[in-house]
Image (cartoon, rainbow, N blue to C red; front, top):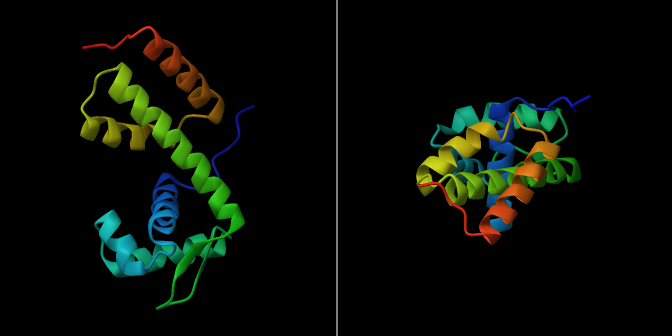
Length: 134
């Protein structure tokens, strides 16, 4: 039986954003999350409260936002799926980078790790033989 998603897609997107900001800047701030997600800061604060309650981040108002170990693990899995889907859509299906990014982000929330791993293997094999849809 497939593993049930722990977070709604919207919360997953925020968690992934926080994770990527941490990777880039060592820390995430509410204003940076708001800018990255193109939303207002009060919207971010509500999402942060929910992610904190679920144990994925630690956050104090006016302080830094940091992923917990649980949050890092979940976000790494999401980001890994994101990269595989982006590569498949861009390099194999021939979508533009912006279209591959947009649609990969939508798809990543609904595919299992097993399915994404198989897409990754397929992508690698197809790239080896130089396959690409035009």
